Image (cartoon, rainbow, N blue to C red; front, side, top):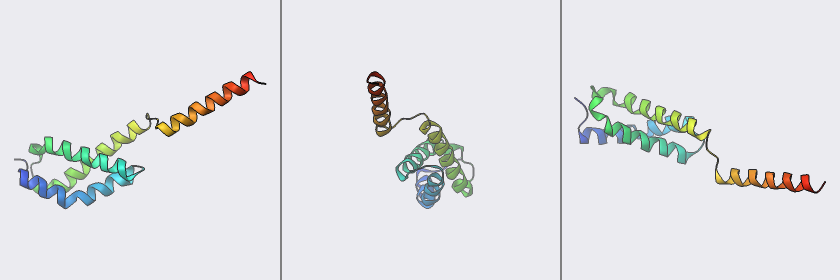
Length: 102
């Protein structure tokens, strides 16, 4: 059966706050939570034909959001932000300098 374009739009608008709360509970900043929600909306749109009952739209959207947030958490553990990279580089330079001038 799936959701029509209008039904999908209505569901996302109705449950956007729930999706955002679920993502924010799992992620460290609002921007990351917004990314997870955006990714969830895209994935939900692509698979909207799989939703059999419109009454289950809230649970379906929140579950997709949680899965996107989980995936983002896994990837964050592998990411180094530029500020962290600069700190590490400065520490390595300082260690190398102190090692040569002892």
